[in-house]
Image (cartoon, rainbow, N blue to C red; front, side, top):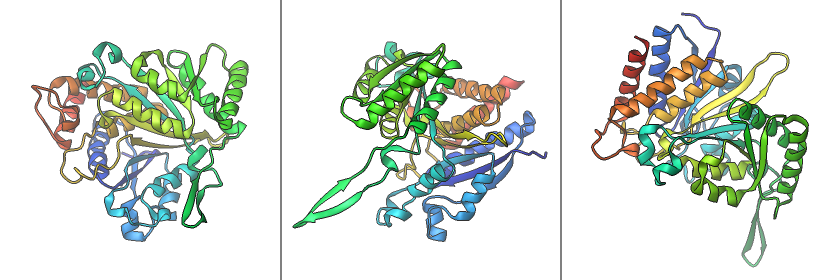
Length: 371
């Protein structure tokens, strides 16, 4: 079956190849049962690329990724690469993809499936029915701005410094994405910064306030300091709908929100660029929030559901295949209800399964839902 949709598959390191391989089983299932097909390309990234080519991302793999309609990414890194020069660390392969493709909008949903309410460390009434979305600015801020470095002052004393820098256009474009997402959800945006102590936060609040006045018709927007947002996420998380924030705070708050759901192994993400006004194309990369988990890599124990749900986000945001995305999400929910689970989401009385076993159940649910 031919297709003009091209997926770039970048499994990476650690458990990445395992969870990506299992997700490709669902891609194959869709091709056979729902006439949804893709042209598949695959490349190396992270430590796998460094081992073969001496760099975490080759120019050729970057070019193939930019030619594709979307990227399905696994994970990068591991203790094997702790001694590698900073510029060649596996994580820099992912950072280069984000920067070169200008993937400025990182969507990290935190949703609690009904059967996983007891997996959270919070009380069931606090997180039951939770469905929030954290929108993290991904290509600016303290992870990329200059100057940064480590310098020796005198007598063996050093200073390390980073710059948190944002411009008006950078804030405006992530703000517009937040408004668009909120319009399709519950119409509420919480803009998060530290305007009380950071000048970049002062600008962020000024720009978001002006943008809301000019373009946020029908959107209920509130401002919140990042430290208070962290507290509110564990106190009353269901007060939020869409949280929009900068790179550093988004990194921290999304991991905090992840644990509300019970496991990082359940959380997908999407990193999106702007829509090209001429071609209509939008660069997009989809990956699980969890890392490479080197302690269980190669053992067939990793939870594949975050990778699968990342593919579901791909169908939804890159290919406008809402029905197929909803089908996968429903199959995951029913698979969790069925009983067997991977170790990270185990509960008393449940059967423990591995990576393949978990996906076997999902595929069985897909078949039941379509027959």
